[in-house]
Image: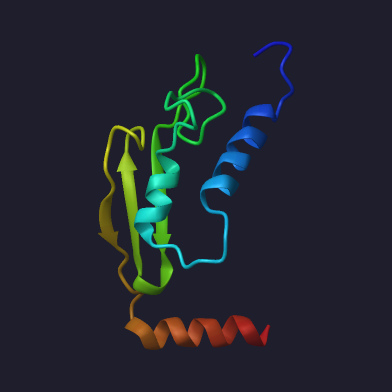
Length: 109
């Protein structure tokens, strides 16, 4: 890590995500999961690929949020090695009415 710019890997991985998700299209959860598993054009994970496999740092999980469905998809482990499992998010006490009231309350502030 010595001698490397601090954010070089982050910028390279951001370029990878931008390349994969380029365009005006609606993305499905599967598109995002595929992007998180990406090992770049070489097909080999490194410090500069979205799915990171470096000497010091590595991807250990991935999360895709589906807020309108109140779900999230998580891979526990490197995204290229583990598929995502889906988990529901419970509504707060009072259900949708409580969520709506909370939104209205925060909007009034």
